Length: 293
Length: 203
Image (cartoon, rainbow over all chains, first blue to last red; front, side, top):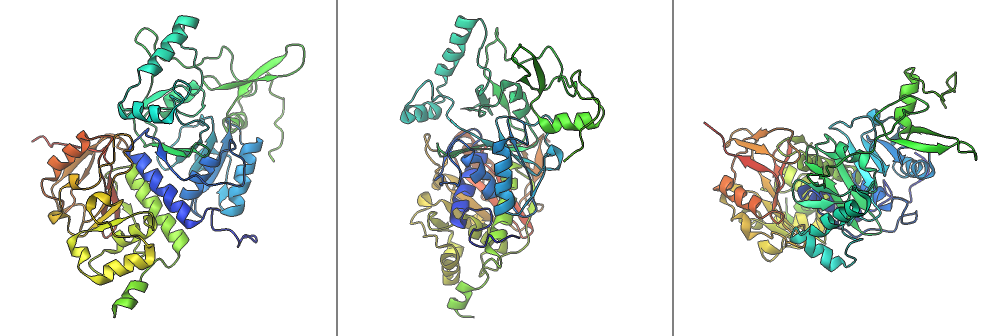
């Protein structure tokens, strides 16, 4: 271990971890309910995943293997710096392979590779309250959750239909957990909502600035809100990934030049790399594989 | 051994990593009700507090969490001073003030609705009950279903509270309010969060 004697294991002090751990247990016991917790200042700004980092720091142990993704990618700034943070303060093994990780901390995606029952998915959540943009007062939204009064959310979805002819919400699409609490799945694309339903993995959500923790236990009903005549639908793409030819995955649009050239590639970089290693080639894939780093 | 020694000895040998291991076992048990998450005996609390229940208290309790002890645990001064020394948790005046309750003899415990149930606005402000049970096989069988359970799970904890199935049904009906139960056996930990339903066995 390098010289980190001035920090406790996983950065947080033990009393903070106990407080967060108690909040996590309550969150698991009341699926979808946002448990208030005394969020700490972290050595990164709010909006960079301080909630997810505090949850991960409170559950991680020396035997864990951590994967961090940012919009599906292992190699973007947020993912790289959080991975480096835990390597430094907890000296844990890190990976980019979904199947090898015991804890996956994510910003706004769920990996394409199906999660298994030993794994924990930790979400970084900016605004945990699904009703916040409809009702700005915390006292009111708390009462609405207490009374299970979610009519306003249905009105919002209905107004989408009245204005656009379809439900125009594409990310942070509200879900109902175990038939009780309406929950914000964090700003994941609605493409990922079905993966939350009866997932074998434990899902934990941390919102640092808003000081809330919530959870979805494994094998829990997570239903996207919709109407009988306007059922919930996920995004579809009319072309496969340009690099690995994957279909039925979430794709990012990448601009190639200033003449309108663009391509669609997997948002999940690990999934894309694995497929290319297995010999799948999209129409824009290079002839030979670049050597792995 | 005098009380002062008993109060000081028997804590976590490695506080940071032992607390993490115990918490992960409780978290996995809470996320997968009915499964037994094995735990080594990290703590050696004075009798009648069990090693598992003592370890859970050390991992989760501190000066923010009033503790309630059942009469059997209240009686010996050593238990109170051991918990006081290692966790700093104050003792709750009434069960309804407690964040955690340690219960050594669940068969004789008071009704579940005597503990804090939380409020409709803040259902998290409820008591978590830590029950010491001898094993998970010799009692009346309970068939469990609910979040965290793929189809059904089955346990038969010994020495459970009286009329437990009926009491638990009432606890379910109070959702989102209600208590959560942690069963501390000599081998490990099993949880019954308030969402877990007990299916009546069909003959």
